Length: 115
Image (tube, rainbow, N blue to C red; front, side, top):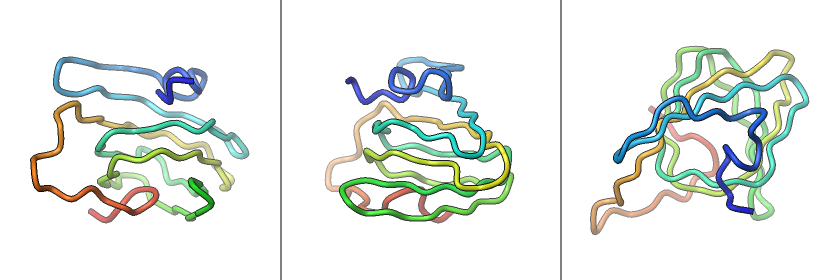
């Protein structure tokens, strides 16, 4: 397993743009859909639909409820997820390819952080 979500769940993640600095993934799922464990580098997430998810990693779980139109920072992490809502999810992930600046501390939050 590569951990790349486009490889672990190609039916849910689709690469829509990529260059030497960023990669943009489109994500779509339905109620009850789950992702295999995968990883994201530091990422900006944009939600096109409201959703409710459970994010799991390393024995920890968090519930994420976001409205349509939310923009959130997601620190680099490995996790799996499940749509625990009653509606489909549609979002974009703008993954950064450049390394974190020296001296910058990596986030420890699971799932998306605040704006």
